[in-house]
Image 1 (cartoon, rainbow over the protein chains, first blue to last red):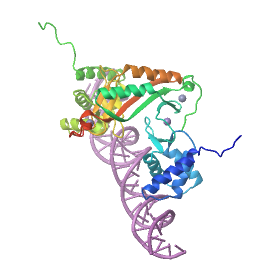
Image 2: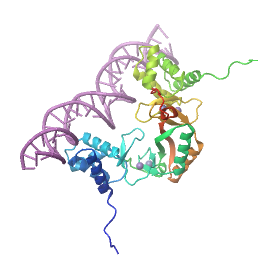
Image 3: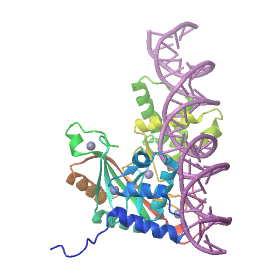
Image 4: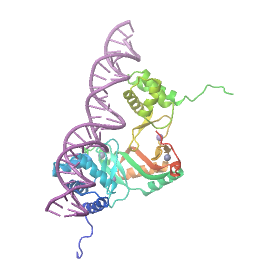
Length: 161
Length: 161
DNA sequence: TCGAAATTGAGAATCAATCTCAAAATGAAA
DNA sequence: TTTCATTTTGAGATTGATTCTCAATTTCGA
Ligand SMILES: [Mn+2]
Ligand SMILES: [Mn+2]
Ligand SMILES: [Zn+2]
Ligand SMILES: [Zn+2]
């Protein structure tokens, strides 16, 4: 049937648009570097470090500096388009935050793979705990570290990232 | 009545003893510096940074170096007598781990106070989540950030630490 | 007491992240 | 288009916590 044009913009396109709005709303400027970084970041999924992103970006434009990637990821985070994650003992990792629910993580300490989960019941219990302490929660961190299925079975799993 | 001698050693005394055992078990040596650091650390409660501990230790012995405090806290952690906590955006903090259950934390982002809680139901749900993913959890991190009662009520609360 | 082995303090090194600054790019107004 | 105030950039310096290095000192069992 295919009567109508495609409805859903790609994540990268949506991000570009929302970032443009955010940027112009505060008198900032669009740049070639920023566009390339944003394009590269949203063209994939996962939890990416600045180093990893820089590597990919550099492959497309050798002149881009690390500071610019750091700065751009900070902007995306402030604009609510990416979230920064600080897992145990590594660099900050960023993930896209468009069309995503809040979620928490399972991190395999052997292969480095990161798995995601949502658990409404846990969230409720957290709220209750906070309430009991007269505490207003703004954000939280729940991370489960251990071995993923593959690593527990002793399979040869490549260390990720 | 008071017939028998006191039963419960102080935390500091218990720590000294268990550390001595751990140390001699692996051919290490006792030192004046280590004793002072351990004594100082266990003579109080709370979540202490190396800087804070160093300051207290230095007040008693001006010659002790920062590296030694770092090394000693690492030993205490490996011996299971202290636990290292890595809260958001700060230095590592250590807390005594003797006669203590596992617990998680509420951290006030305004005054810096840290509150503790235990919630068996949350722990169970975490285990279930992990199981559903075929994951074997070795440890986890659950931290709730926000405003404590005093800070939410706009009281003048001193920034801790 | 002796001496191999562990420990120490000071400063150098590391590492991620931020800052500095001169040069380049952007974009709104003319 | 040209102008030009403002923003952005890349390189390298800096920061801050932690670890490392190494010569000098301390510990403790033989
Ligand atoms: Mn995620
Ligand atoms: Mn605690
Ligand atoms: Zn794994
Ligand atoms: Zn508070």
